[in-house]
Length: 435
Image (tube, rainbow, N blue to C red):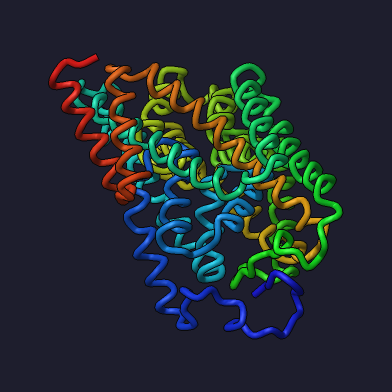
């Protein structure tokens, strides 16, 4: 197990455990299972909404980690290729129960969307491709509830992590640049998002350079578990690179007719390894990778469905794999797209735990966190405007969002309640022919 201060330190695990952690491994795993088993079924709204659900449940309600640690994990995921909310779901489990805990939390969060999209791709749920009016209304209400959770999370994180003038400025700058870039220069998000995080760190590194080492502002919360050791993390990162190189080389040398699954895997694995920006960026780019095996109509039908379902948008890979290759195509495409991001988060976490001790990181952390909050703000506005524009009752969707926000933020209702009520209100709005 890697620790935040020294990978070889002899400090006991109990000294680093949060107060709500459990030395008994079985109890740890039960707690992880209990918290993640249902979450994947109500995690509607896309990556930003997932972050909102995580923040409300694991930071505010369960107290598994502080706002600062959560923002660090979020920033770490945004700096890596792959699906950010998926990487955060694995990382949360790692901090609670090590490698096995991370695998459990991540898999439990992904499997509902994986299951549904696999069935859709195989044709067992073909009716979802051309949904009935009440299904569209339910989807619109659930999406409005998801937006409300993002608003709730954004408020909470901003109040905690953007309390000073420099962090407020960085949050605003990050949000504005990210929003405009996402709309007009989507491919550039591959380097703009990491650059914004780096700029935030540089800003507070400069503005807070005279902060004494003993100041409370430089305190960094201990992390009980980081999964792999430094060596194990390095080996996993090397394995990720070797698989990428091997897949690319083998695809070039082996004809499609001899190994179609290899060609499918290489396309998804390379995309998942090299593209930043999450599902909104990666999924449209996948069309260019799979257009030889799937029609545009099939692709866009799946893209529309996955955005109306709970769980990560990357679950579109299961649908594409099923359409391309049937049952055997599902694991090839799904592991190909998800694998790189998961390997990266497990490989990088031990190094993150190691460099958290340095003064340079402590000074940069407020800027990194505020820039990460800015990216959530940008996602919030992008998602809210999109949800309203595609809703069959745009004005009612806004009202549903307001009600869900009041429930989540002021009345402290659980996230499933706020989202479920949004879905019911969506059906009610459709039945009443509201606008």
